Image (cartoon, rainbow, N blue to C red; front, side, top):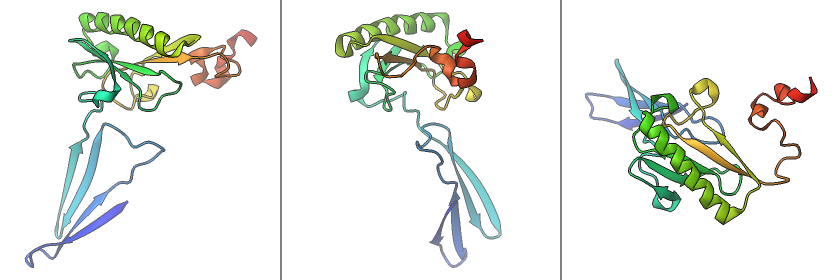
Length: 174
């Protein structure tokens, strides 16, 4: 935990700002930053929302856009050409999107695939959506991962997304 103290007028001897440190290899991109202000004898808690990285992405990441969708290059690609298909309306997951948005996302997925095929010539694709914290969702703005796959990028790609549970991935051996 980091603590910062700033001198204030003599009527308030000092203020202490405490913030929890970031954890993991990547800083969380959405959620809240929590601060605690100690103005003895009072304590204030303040939670500030972090900006959504998909609501106003850098233009250099944009692959394709429509009135309802954005397609971006992933900032942390698993393979060359990893893309994200995102609705413009900020909704947390697939099940909050309207049928019209789901249709537009599916169309954008096809366009993204064509772009990736032309630029990277992959041998296959994985398509994935994480819904909820238990499923690994860290940015709560719906996004579909389109991950190009290449021969040799994984020694044994059988099982695909089932490898999120490695002990259950090789179902064909049971």
